[in-house]
Length: 429
Image 1 (tube, one colour):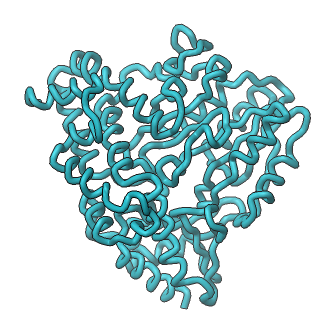
Image 2 (cartoon, rainbow, N blue to C red; image 1 turned 90 degrees about the vertical axis):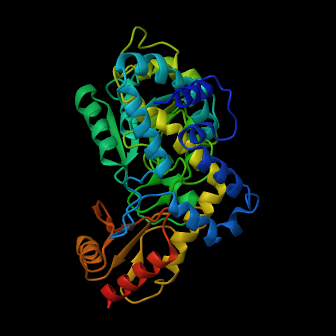
Image 3 (cartoon, rainbow, N blue to C red; image 1 turned 120 degrees about the horizontal axis):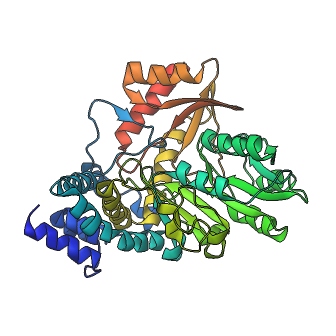
């Protein structure tokens, strides 16, 4: 690494740079261009969601394959090239002298990164722990809670399997009672969702687990309204935000939850295997650290980061992804993602044999949609989309959900969605 690059690291870690510091360190020319382009139309995100010149430039910032159309961004998103470059550069930097450059140089960037992530989340930096994914964060909380035999936890059959399995392990090991809610998706009214949860609450309910967005269908849940009822009854609230941070605009404190975790390799476009966990400040000492340090029941959020040797290169590239996200703007990104979903869905609504499993209500879905074709199994539809049209999606068969999940991202073009719509019409016929 050049002396100039080393100086850039030092400037970032000392907080001397403004604007898009991590992006600037990775590619100063791109960062300057990004600042100029992003300033246009930022105050009118809904109109700017249809500016194909801007979104065409965003597409060029990715290295997506020209041979397939990737519409499974709900699983994991590709990283912008500038994030890939930051990761690779950091990795090569570490290999110049691992124990020195990893621990004494790159590790100094953790606190500025924590502060940057906290700003995106709208919370105190002392409430953010940096980890590898939502599963790790939520397992830390689930296994860290002080629960005893007979305590009840409310969750749904439509939650993510890793979280369901974690709760089942606590049930088997500790004798807690799992109280199940079955969501008849899609649901069009928030008050119906709130009632499904609150009717399950009893005097023995200690925790409610809410999936912020049901990953199978894209249904957005009214976390705050459920949390408000839960807190009046002394029930703690865990929010699985794996699919929501950087997908649509919100702040974690506004959700009213006590605990939250997300994967940054989804909508934030950070390196694979990166995430964060939020614990409300007055709750930190109530959660035992999963990977213990000298104060596993202490009040410092950093007790949850005792991973040992980790990928510093990957971690420091998160900052470039956050800068890229902020360059687009959270509201503008949300508007674009919802526009893309509606663009292809509206071409198929009302057609014979086609139905959708995401909510039609404004604000209750964003980028993710789930389509079902009568007489076709989900895996048959997704298989045909790829074999005939090279469109990558995922067939969902989980509980009462049977359809194909389709998830565009900010780099997805309207031409690709036109091809998707035509393909689905052909399959339905």
